[in-house]
Image (tube, rainbow, N blue to C red; front, side, top):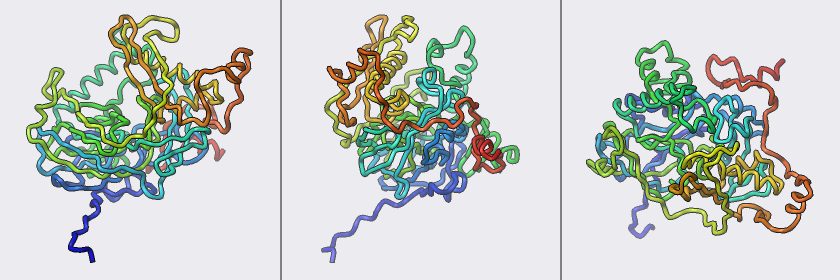
Length: 476
């Protein structure tokens, strides 16, 4: 017998997904836009423990193979596919939603992930001016560890987290987002263009509402609704893309938001309408390659509670009482790395031009310094770029007041390598001194099959699609 002890039920699965199915064919509809009129697909009570499953952020567009063509031609109008919205029965605008992350993991039978760099004309990335072509690395999960056949000699423990989790915006907040992001896009190429645009070459500057690729949960998918449903067309033309983090949380890509964390999200609509996705097995601070954490399908086990009127505790810094940002508590479980090699960067660009207290540029320089240093140890620069995007490296703003230079640092855990990469006398220094290049480790990351061909974003799985560019060329 059980000695009178009542067994604890496993968390109920609120939203299940099948990664083998297309994202618009899931039993519970997914969504890839933010809008207050996207209806909830499920509801929970405070204190209830529940499980949510998610597809990978691209909805299965990237394959476990040895070509980067799928990254090159990925259809980014579809991202990010999110599970939700989930209504919390007692939540009202002005409340604070506490979300406790109790457990996270990959889906059974789908224990692999990918990272990559987008083509400069289709997504780009932090260093797209240095590495303009698409690349990819596949990672296999071994319990808490991962390794990649495309980046040999590296193994590390992951820190699984949702790259994206947030509440739905109100109509007022949605208008704020769309107006300010359109104003930024309209500045491009004018004297008002921000200084950062001169050395960060990811384009567009912001992803504005776009009906193409839109999946609006219960309201339906672009393939059947666009141009045929006036309500769908209106919502899709207003709905914000999920690309950046904003006041509602969203795609903040915070690697430490893992098991045991508590997240405090502002509530803007009745029920809060919580959504999540973009699961990562591991990520480096900054997710610098943009396609850059180890992207995977996965599950979250969560518990929510409501702090009535709690949004007043979030400082409103800006023109509106809605100008708030979430708060979170770091949980007790993280990989324990104690020895790091730390690279510095300052606010001086690659042409030697001085900038003023620019932490973004300083971080770019720290990342470049690290890439070019580790390339002395047999890695290609593309391998290191991908590695820095997904390994447990720590980014810091180390100095922000000593004019004119901000100082950013990037700390790489030494234990992830199967060789000693610290500066020292020996073969690497001898080769550098004599002008000889170090023999590269094999195999390399996945590359494009046709580097001179243009990126042609296309998802051949979409109804009415003419097929992927690479596939069409192969048929000829």
